Length: 278
Image (cartoon, rainbow, N blue to C red; front, side, top):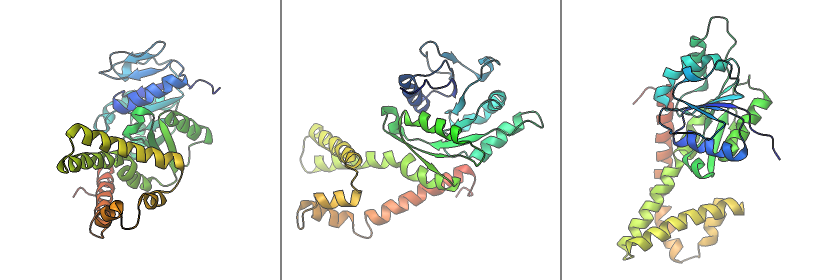
């Protein structure tokens, strides 16, 4: 049996922070502090506080997890900076680069303080049901043990992968971060098309949702690549082939989905300051 997770300082416990906390509680979490202004309670022996100022100076977390809204994080950096001298920071904030957060912490610390360590991760919303995809980036100063702890924390809510270059996080954001919305749109359009073809709305919704969910589960559990699975469903000259002839036309899904990913990746770069806002 794995050892209990070390004590954590969780900053923000909304949808993503709450999903991660639920996973950690199931795995076993040493007494931790959760900073959140809206959550009503956390189970004992953990402590819920409304601001970082309420966390005792004597607390030594194994890791600080930033899960607040990106636009609000600057306000808490000064308060959590002293703890960042004791533990690495794992940020799950979209559009905030590790170096930017490191600079914010450094500015809040006395001159001559050691450099804080910030590791960046991009989880997605299926983390709320334990089926998330998290991609992580660590600067060269991160140790193997620190990377391993990040992997363990994020594996509590799904699968985990690492990238070696932070610039790749923009494509990650466009595919896995935003990707659930694309899948939900597919289910939405399948439902609408079913209704247009004469199906009762409840039935159209049921078969659209379960078809998307079932196809995803089959792809993950079978380990077969998506193109092979697609071909396995497609009989030459059959109904699926006729539909794919439309969807796979050069100006249909191959072009529009690629354009959508490029737009999302560009917006990620704009939010991080790597590109000017267009």
